Image 1: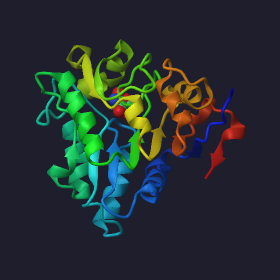
Image 2: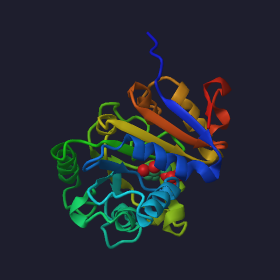
Image 3: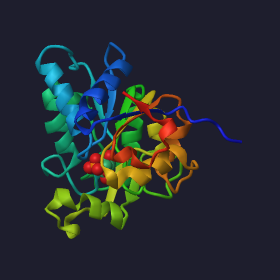
Image 4: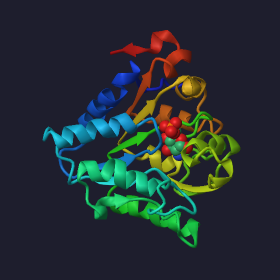
Length: 254
Ligand code: GLP
C-alpha cells in the first residue's frame, strides 16, 4: 500500500528561509503558552534571528513559550559553548526572553545518560508534548541525532554518532574530529512524530540527496527523516540548492 505523503514543501531563496520559516512556525503555534521544539545547528539560525527581530520590535511575544531541545552531546554541559544547551540559551531563549525554567535540554553531563534520556522524554510528556518541532536534516538523513537504523517509533535515548555526523559537525569544534563527542541524547523518531506539527529547514547542496530520500523515498529507518511522510502536519522549507534533487512537479514555489 502506498500512502500519499502530506508533506508541504516550500522552496525559497536562501535568504528567505528564515522569514518564511518564522511565518510557518508562528502560524502553527497556539496563542497561549506554546511549546516549541528547537533544533540546533547552522540551518535554523536565520529563523531564530528572525524570531528575535520580531520579538525585539514588539511584533510578537514568546515569553510564555517553553523551549524543548532536540538533542545534546553526551559529555557537554551548558557552560561549554559547543553544547546545545548553550546554543538554546544564547541563540534562542535569551533573544526570545524565555526564562531558564522554561527550557528543556537533555542533561549531557548526567552520570547515567540513559536515565537522563528517560527523564527528558518524561519531561516532554509532562508539559503536554510539543506544538511545533523545528528540525534540521543531517547529510545522512538524520533528524535530531537519530542516525540511520533508528527505529521509527523510538523514544528519547542515548545514541552513538556516526563518523559522517561527527565529521559534519567537526566545523563547530575547530575542525578537530577527536573533539566531537561520540554519543548524544536525542529525542527519538517517535518523540518527534508526536509533535503536533513539524517544520524542517534544509539548506545547501550537501543535503539535496538526503532531502529527496526523506520526502520521496521509502519510509525506512535507513533514512530517519522519511518518518516525516507519516506525519499529518509537516512543512519543509528548503532553499534551491537543497531542493535540487526533488521532483519539480512536487515543488510549491513561494
Ligand atoms: C546535527 C543536529 C541536528 C541538526 C542537523 C543539521 O547533527 N543533531 O539537530 O538539525 O545535524 O545541522 P546543520 O543545520 O548544522 O547542518
